[in-house]
Each structure stands twice: as C-alpha cells, then as structure tokens.
Image (cartoon, rainbow, N blue to C red; front, side, top):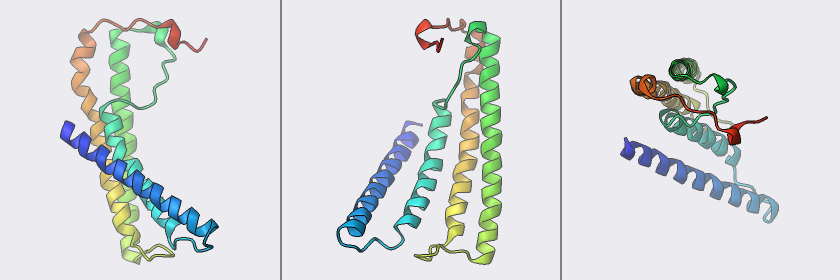
Length: 166
C-alpha cells in the first residue's frame, strides 16, 4: 500500500511540476516574447483532470476528504460506524457514477475521433484514463470499511471545544 501511495504521490508531484513549468514558460513566452506555447491551455486542462483523479484514491483510502461534524454532540460508536458506512457508500456510488459516465463519454469520443483544437490530442484516451481512475477511486472509498469492527468496539470520540465553530 505504501508503495502505491508513494508512486502515485511521486507521479502527481512530477505532473504538478510539469504543469508549473508549462505555465511559467507560457507566461514568459506570452508576455515577454509575444509567442505563447501553442496548446498550453489544452495540456493544462488534461494535466489537471488526470492529477485530480489520480489523487482521489489516496484521499479516499486515507479518509482525508472534507468532513463537517455537525452532530458531534451526539457522538457514539453507532453514529461513528454510520458515518463510516455512509461516507464509503456515497463516495463509492458517486465515483462509480463518474466512472460510468466518463467511460460512456470516452466511447462516444472514440467513435467520433474527437481531438483537441490546437494540438490534435485524442480526447478518448484521456477520458478512458479518467474513467479508470474514477472507478479505482470508487473502490478505494470502500477500503476504510475494513476498520468498521474497530469503530464499533472503540470508545466514542469526545468533542473538542477548539474544533467548535461556535
């Protein structure tokens, strides 16, 4: 698991660095040389889409997604378990829906031979990759369910006053 997370994190860091360099040289070319990089916007859009869906599985497995504890006064093991199950179920369902829709869009894009406007990059492979990453992310939302027995046995977390918004 650590190897997977390390590999994904490294790939994401390389992609962010490449996007940063692309943006830097595009801005320099645009503002100083009056010669922007052709297709920089397309490459940035593709890179950001891949970057987002590349990192979602790690966010899901580490349970680092945004959580709003609006009922932390009513903490109990049952509510903690319910929150875990709902988070896993909803996350898996939504990312499964995204994966399914992206796959259908990729198939349509492949049938029509859609390409980007400036560079002529095929859109279908990018959409297939996003669909696969979203599907993997959906499965990763289920991984925290392996902690469900421990959540049911654990003592409920006491609310911390410093975390209160009131």
